[in-house]
Length: 171
Image (cartoon, rainbow, N blue to C red; front, side, top):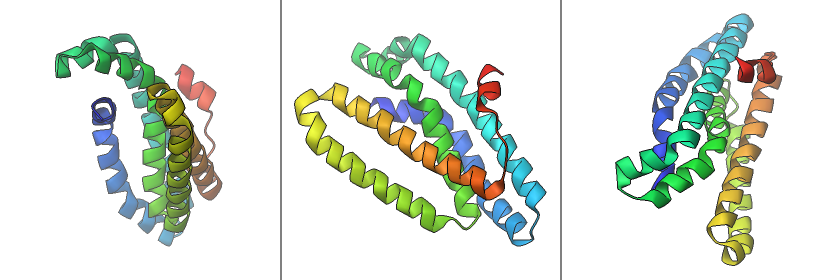
């Protein structure tokens, strides 16, 4: 409960962009301006990838210092380091969900969110009592990876954007 707000804090800018993109993407899609939709999608995914990998690295390297600086607690820093690799999936999921909603894909987003919630609840009931925090961290990885893959795959399919994630990662 203390580590996640810290991990999500850098994404506030991305979430603002996502919120602003919904009407823009909706209007462009409505007017059949496919090139604008495609280019905007490609650019925002690239920006999100770069920002998310930067913050993932920052939390991996300095998680303990950040946790101690904010909460005066080394355990939070350990959690920040453990959860840092999931940041790209969290941020990409969030931004792709916003774009999908702007492209009239609310039903898909809703179904994805419901299926993720059901999986999380089932996994928490089955795994966390036996494994504790380690199990919860594993569930977080699975859940965020699952929703990110579904949303980004759907976004690529809808916009026909071509993203070379390997190139973006090395960029």
